[in-house]
Image (cartoon, rainbow, N blue to C red):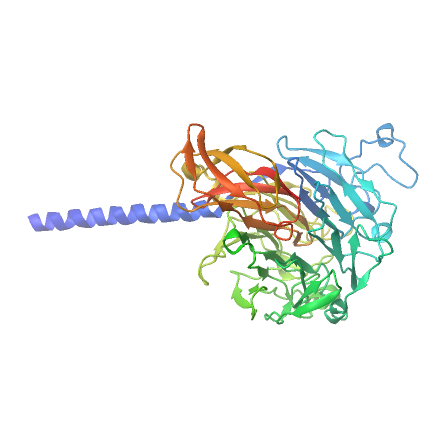
Length: 547
């Protein structure tokens, strides 16, 4: 009898232990999914284009010729209800203040539909191209601490029409503008005297008849200073200084195209000081099978999107694509580098392509992709949003680690009824697992930075507080926020900086960090500095790398 009681007691203890483990596993699984919060019911403008400014505000705009938006301009002469000839008083651009959750209407004149952008070293957004009267225009937005800043448009036209082009900031602080519809060339902003556009036969080769699939080409500045360009399913390395293609990479497998309108997405995985920022690896996920755009446009047949991702080390002597599958198909997906160095795949659809009413079956659940995990264990499926984010949706990483998500407009103009996916004006935030209070014991708070203007190769001191001793896996990330539109986050870049031993002092911990060696590793400009302790990031602080 005593043995029976003991056996029963052990069985109960075993079951309780199993229950506790199962409960903790379920809770951990729920934690990693994150959560969604509605920020604004009506931002006034649909977020076709979005970018984070170093003033902790977000610049959002759509297409100028879309007709009435849901917010009025307040600039002169619109505050007197007498707009300039040929213009109305509807705003098509706003500045969103993260801290106050308010928006300020702005005034952009020429049409910005499907345009491109990148930041100059002083934090000014250099914004190029668009449609109709905007296809050869360059615009500038210089952030300000008050409400005085607005768009400035250049009277100097670009050499070619830039509709669905891509921008990349270069080490010399010029911007290279690549491609666009029926523009098989590239050019620079600003130009050298007498300079025009440079022909790029690669864009002719990758242009699919009736579908194109080489628009918004993926561009990444490599560690040798040359430009990696991916279009359709092929890629090259361009020496833009000498107008020469110096390398051709293998065709990406997967049975389809990756660029607009098949619209997958691309990131350059974080660069590391351990190899002097020399190893460059590109990740491309999603897209659509060959012929998908024609089927969606002409037959209203929405084929399943691509499920595959490919990784390639473009600095390897023998580069090859390493292929793997996402948990489900995805097209029109944005890809963002999280403060941890992991990749967030968010927004989009499971069927069809980009284009007016050309997709179905919204992809409501983001994916977390962990580059350092073993293949087969890299993906996690996250919490679902209730808002479909289809064509013309965007997402940006905020300084506190949340993801700002907006847009979705699958019909020309603003349509709130009578279409499968109406114009979406709501702004929401996705909060990843790492911001949960359960991880606060690991969370660093940056208290001071010895200098915010940091020359290449120089050292600077960062002080921070921490509830407990730092983890053995503490890392220091510098992140260049992108200009995001049409699933493509241009100029997105993260670097893991070299650090001295962390020391505890009277005013908290301090560490010495070393800036990247040159503007090739990190083009001059503003970056978000984050301390990642045991996989949990701090709130980011702005720094600027300068010559």
